[in-house]
Length: 208
Image (cartoon, rainbow, N blue to C red; front, top):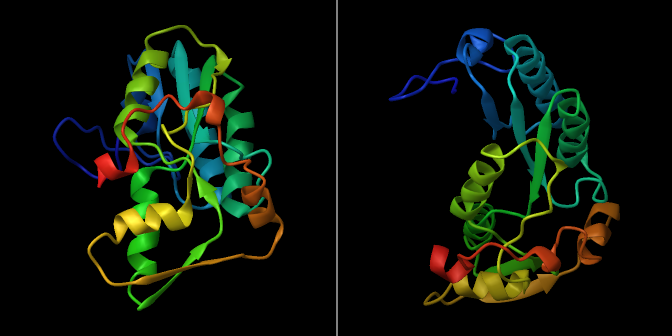
């Protein structure tokens, strides 16, 4: 299901609700990877989907979320956490994953436009979308289990170290900086990590 037409797509919009019931007609299992990138709109979209899942009598809703949404507090994560609560109204499985490789690549791409690359003094456990997709399908083929074990990339790494890999072959000076605020303190505490569930296989360098 997508807002845009394409091969194999059913067109619908989770914010307005247009086409959603038709998209779920006859559907047994739903994997929800949709996001609006806005906390409150994410909750609205999730409510639309959950209501449609209930009307359609779907057996299982699999919902992807983010490691640490209950401990790292800012707008987008607050919306993700609230969306998890909405999903619990139907038979469900929630999978929290760490940051995707391509998210960090986009961050580093923006930072690398200057000769001096200022990188947050934080650790990440980036995971490949292909690894997460395979886990979501595995969960979808099973019964609803509520909260699934978290899913992380194969390595916990300093952001500066990951930036060096991204910038390999380019002359840039990387300077780690400490960012203020509660959210970044939570990141420094490692609430965005799940080293005990380093189940992803594709490293950041392999992704690059």
